[in-house]
Image (cartoon, rainbow, N blue to C red; front, side, top):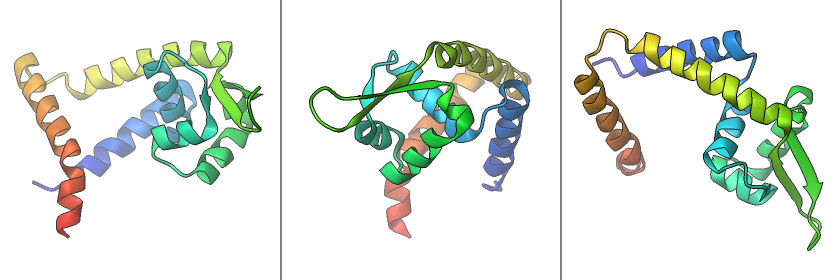
Length: 138
């Protein structure tokens, strides 16, 4: 199997997200992260950790004009940290994104039997969870 094929699929998905929703992959990750956490407001440090990126990378991403439309940033009452959550526009964009992702997934896997797709998805999850172990082998 040519493992670089996964990169082709990832590029296709990125292009489709951009075409359908006008989102970058970093915006997509932020929106989906908050959606998966019920839009719970988080300090920037915890958000960066949750996204597995550095605080400086997160800060740059949040400073992008288009990204600012999707988030609300407030100062913490307790300290000088900034708290982030999705704005109403962001919540609306998540719904649009999830619909687009569902369509992308449907098109991508339309030729695979439901049972086979379930097995395939589970194997990919297993591979991704073991990826850290695999990368330590090299």
